[in-house]
Image (tube, rainbow, N blue to C red):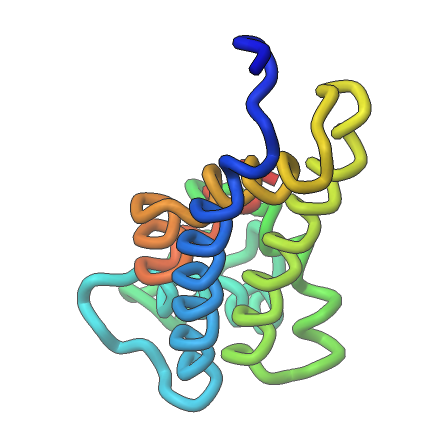
Length: 157
């Protein structure tokens, strides 16, 4: 066995464990579509509200709906909102749009890793393992899926 190259067979068990947990958490988070997240330990509701304010109030306009009014996107980074706004305009359901954006961000990240695999010298198994080591670990699942830090996930993308 070469010390520089890890055989693919050593990655099957971590891929299975991380992949099953990752899929379980994505399916579990799908309840976001039916139940609005009013939990105090997440950011989903805040991001949904800001996406709604982008549609209703516009970009850098005064929005009177929250905290006696504020200028929209003066502090928050608008990249994710501009990315997902066309989908929100089509679907017109904020909860479904935000869940789809989570899935789309993960898929685009996997595609980006897969496209660059030749430059990195990775096999398909190593690409999947790399993706799951980055996005399927407990910290990433806690931040991106459970808490809903969708901006950070979009930044990773």
